[in-house]
Image (cartoon, rainbow, N blue to C red; front, side, top):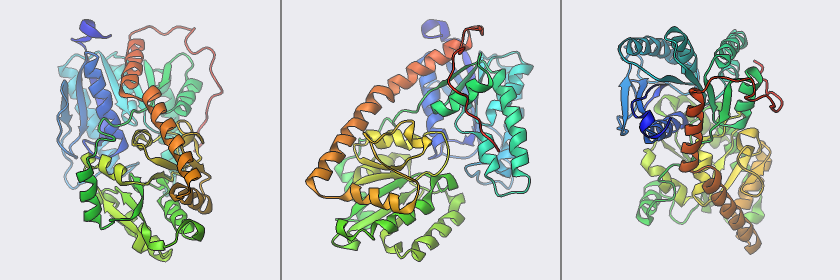
Length: 427
């Protein structure tokens, strides 16, 4: 399905997120639809009526109607998301009545929508798992959350069994899908580093340093949202624990933690984290930048001495990890499957997800001793080499091409007949 044979083929792509927004899912979707157009497909991308207006060559971006009173859709499950998913479903139905498509591609809960309309219109569909929905729902602090998560798990399994293909971010979710449906083509297509990673100019970096008043500071940088799985409280406690290691720093005031991100709808979470920083007596060394344009991310990574991900749960590797690896900065991360599917002790400073351990690796990331500098340099080189070999944009496009080729092939009993142990998620 490449070249001239695919030029007349159109994909209905359902992304139940604000688009474009500085979040992992929109970044991945932008990369996916861009790669599909390079492979010769036409794409109708259906998104929510929120986010930045952008253009992608070969992609028609279609926004569902606005729902009065809903100004934002936070990350993770929410009532706002549920209402917009309903609108997206009927909008997709309308498109299918008017246009002819080769396949339907649904991201996260839109994979369920893709399954329904795929069955109604006899179209193959791709179930795109950016995360595990039952796992997210089970973690909600709401009555009957676990019961609802079990119901969604049953629906998800039904949709996976009938999919033409399942696309995942990491291998753990691919194993989960294969365990449910051994005959379905379920593969991990890891993210690639953003195209502009490492392209920040010295002037851009200096401008940010002046703006944030962090000249001559040593800097740890976190980029992302405030979802509980990201471990921001752990990051703050680990940063505070680092200051207890007096042998690493002559002065407390020469180091700062930048927390880059946090959408406007996450303001309450930001206030909670700021209160925690004050309680830990590190508020003067922590800067919450708020949401910043995607174009500034390379500059934030370039000014960092260490890039941090203190994630505490989840099996999907966050997109930022690939950009961290390409940015040629040492990475400090928790030793959980979300990270270890990509990172290792050869490419990053890994630690158990607890404050003292994180404080120790942060101190190691700033250690000025020649032996420590050499060790970090070896890790940086290894991470850069790995991202170029396995997680490049070219590799992403090749794997996506293979997945879409499998969509047009009939299922056969030989596919995935010898699979590793299935991964189970329990609500």
